[in-house]
Length: 262
Image 1 (spheres, rainbow, N blue to C red):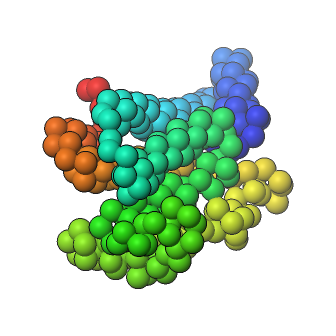
Image 2 (image 1 turned 45 degrees about the vertical axis):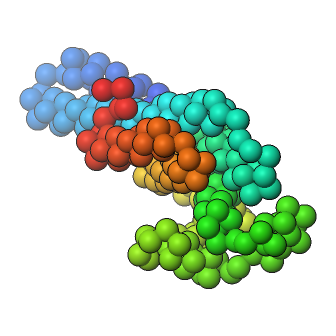
């Protein structure tokens, strides 16, 4: 498992050693009952190892898909020249920050530094919220104040309500407020983050594969959503369509468990 330590491969190595011991044991003894029990144990260990490999492969697939998307989005972002306008500078900067956070999360997961990866999920999602609000919720005076770090942004609940209203997304963004609390716990070293620093009472990170997959999927989805909004706002119709298709393809791939290149 991705347990956040340099010793994460030890359980698999231990199972392989134990499997060899049982295989030797089976070959050496003759009593049928003991042979059958030993073989069942050996089969169980083999199946467990295969299941672990499958999950790790799934995490790697999601990381690779995210990398393909990120590289393409960065190419699209940088192939245009944008007007020198404060609002556009904010939006462009937000997209670039989100791209960097997304890459950092992937690299941290690959390095088994999952606590730091999870801590970056909120900043990425927050960047998406701010960009959406600045794009359609802020007036020129507010944008100017934001450029000087003098703007008091709306409270989260108000901001999400305004985003839903401005983008006609029903209550989609408001429904993310509950998940926001969990993201804050990871970012600010809250109880969720602290609880995952221990494994069976030992100080050893314990982030589940399901949680890692969820973080990778959520941040990739947020990144695509942000860049699509950006290209629509910039009038880059072709890039907006490509990004929309990217979102649909990514969602379909997750439902099937495929890769984007299939």
